[in-house]
Image (cartoon, rainbow, N blue to C red; front, side):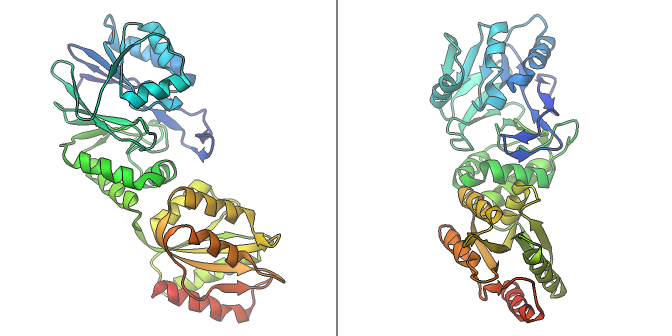
Length: 384
């Protein structure tokens, strides 16, 4: 943890069920905020408005008789900035620190009135006394105004939404690959190019600790591990060897075919085979698996001369996250006019560097012994 000059004033949210209205968070969320106590007092972000009262009480307890000089706004999204008005009501003389985009977006969300503002640019610094903040712009990671703050004395990186994860700190106090992956790929995943640009900037910094806006403080080996993971995720490279099979089934027949393919792959020594029923699995977890593995199989029933809706929606989300550089096997089911593979191929054609191996497997109704050679051929193609 940083020195006593840094005080944690964030909160844990166990009331939330869906983060950003869509991602399941059974372990809750943390909204992190810090105070740097020096000749000048600087607060790093606020929290979601639902916790404004708890937050301001923590601020008062940490400051005692002192008042803050600065409030750095790393990210305008409401889970971090919607307590600004409560903070300003308590400390009207504080100077808000942000970039030009910060203040433009603040006006879109919060009617703050006349406030003191300090607009900063890439590489500019804010001396606090023994500590100095240097600002690193991180546009589109994952909003255009996002900026990181590097404290030069203790080598602490305030990383905004980067290097965060799902889960409240009292439930998940350490970095967890699965929750960090699910968080990154669903929230930031589309912007791999922008993340790589920020990673290049970070490579020039000596980082002892990372303090994200969500999730645990990263220190020691966890810093290098998280940076390495972000490098893989941002490049869209597969993370693990194996095959992920996602299926959307009407009456269980397509599910049975997917399970039979999984058995065949396992028997042939595939290092890892993961199955997901798109009607029942957390969609964010399924999407993360598609990024995690280099080889994917999509199995879907034909529906209304098109595609089973759960698969159609899943493909939409993959495209929206800029999914790419994968080998994708296709399995379709259709009792009289199979169309699922055609629709899936059309969707995949709009994505980058997707290879569809032969054969495309077509099943009509219930799986039969005569379908097995097709599945075996597809398994061989995936493992080649």
